[in-house]
Image (cartoon, rainbow, N blue to C red):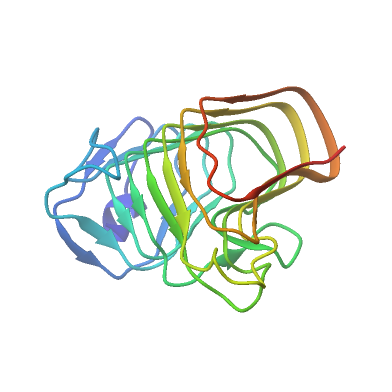
Amino acid sequence: VSDALAVATQNDKIYIFSGTYSDALTIAVSDVLLYGPNYNIHGNETRSEEANITALTTVNAANVTINGLKHTKAIKVGANYTTITNCYIAPTATVACNGNNRQGCIVDSANISDLTVSNCYINAPGSSNSYANQYMSFTNVSNLIIQGNFITNSNCQTSNASYNGMRIYTSGGFIRVIGNEFRWGEGGSLMNLGTSTNNCTEISIIEWFNFDCWWYFCK
């Protein structure tokens, strides 16, 4: 897969067959689409054999779409207009986001805007460090859409899971959380929107399911 990305040009579509891929993926060309064997199939539905990406995936170019892959390593987004959809995301370990020690399954590696995460299965790994087991963590993101996902955390029942959800340190534009299913336990925060500053003009949370957890909204 990394070889295909190395020669990709704008608007290329890369189809990835089922199997296990251990090479780290860096997407450095804009308007590239990555399709796995389960493209357009929800991450929590019955799926065929996966294309399993076992190393870090990094998006460094704008308007990239990742559709239908399995990720057992985290995803770092460093470019605008990124879409992650119909993926099964269950990394064995999280990675740090841009500029602080907070970690997540999906994180930013630069200030970004217009990120969409939709129709994915996301399971954050358990960790004794409450900052290291979040499903998403961003230092600076504007115009974020989280829609139609199934989101859980294997550490959410423990007493030290006080920050095991999503943390955004600086946000702007809009945040839309629409039609997700959260399977969560007690003792943890499901969302913390704008820990340092929240300059959003719109925060919409629609049709969510809440299972014995805490929501945080900070200004």
